[in-house]
Length: 424
Image 1 (cartoon, rainbow, N blue to C red):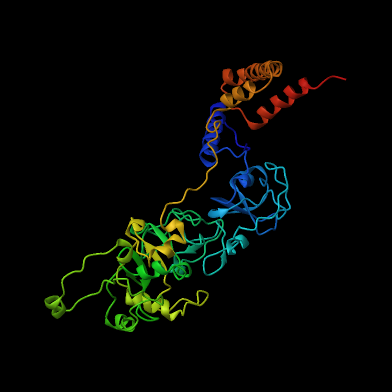
Image 2 (spheres, rainbow, N blue to C red):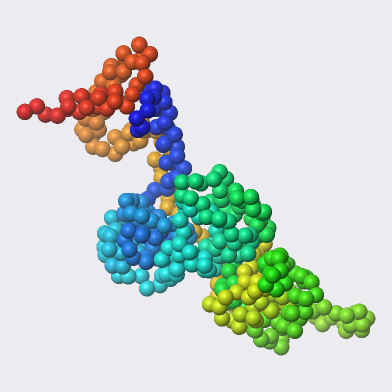
């Protein structure tokens, strides 16, 4: 409570606002560690205080590491809580048995509080940029590092301008509080994002890059402006640079039919269509975009190398992207190796807290109902004594129209508690 004066109604209204805010911020029940559930996709937190590059579940972040400095890493797939293991020095209060270290968890740079391909630490107080999570590696990337906009100047921790994009959220801003233009690809233009390092590991996704529904950001040389690529070309100079590279490095099996453009003479002399023998043998993937192929081939499949000057190779998949995959024997295996590309993942959330949003009176009644009868009766008597004493104490304030100050409330409870103490 602040030192300013306030009326009793102000105090009650303030308490109600705090309860409402708490219910919105923490609507779940944090009473169970997820360790026993095994590796699942769940919200993960990094505890800086424990000085161990491990991750803890949302329940342990609240129940076990309440006073510790933490960084929210957001959802990570196939992750098992490290809190009750020997890898974390702080004992878990929810899972009492000490477990062996998890050997299946993947600990990338996020577990060193570093993010993006620039490997910068994240500070929510000073980070001016919106960050976007990669669907595959689940790292977070700055818009400027994705060539979506110019990098804005850093902001002071105490000077957070209005309408500043929230960097740690998965929402993406269309405008900037620093007067910058909207990003080259806005939040409404795509559904998910995959960074170039992950695209390079998924053959089918590389083949789709730069085609319709798989947007890329490219430019014509080091000095050219960044542009969107979604099928077609960006002019003769850039197109000619990639025309000789008509495919990615992956070999084409002879049984796969590839769609390709025809000249007018081919149209006139085309042969009758052959009947499809099997859907699994007929490739329906779009023709490889030569510009995208040039970008990937220039990186020589070295995923740790710097991105090409023409573009990084990041891909932004538009809505309905899972329905557009080709399911032939050539395209499907690389998709099946990454199940989240074929089916939407479930992300675990703790159960809803039945006490969330209840008033102090309702919370008190629930607490009393859980007590043995004799202790509940003692609790009700103590509450009634406190209520009657407070009403009697505040009656003169109401009669005289006086403001209730913090010192007045503190004085009441000092006298009330003094009366409760046993007399020697």
